[in-house]
Figure 1 (cartoon, helix red, strand yellow):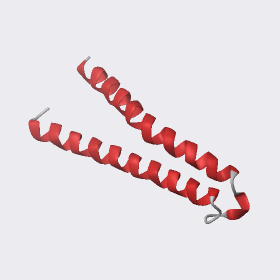
Figure 2 (cartoon, rainbow, N blue to C red):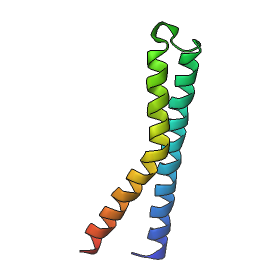
Figure 3 (cartoon, one colour):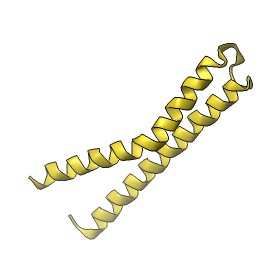
Length: 79
């Protein structure tokens, strides 16, 4: 793999991580808005707490899961 290809792959992974984090923050914000009754108040607060937990878990665990997946793919490519 050439250095340019490695850089492109790294940039693509960086973008995926950032998108994942932004989506997680969106879930947290939507959950918080639902809990206070500003977003879909007819489903408050159960939906809000659910979105909040999903967002927090996604924010902290998704990068770890992606790293493991990418490491496994790198190991498969070397074999």
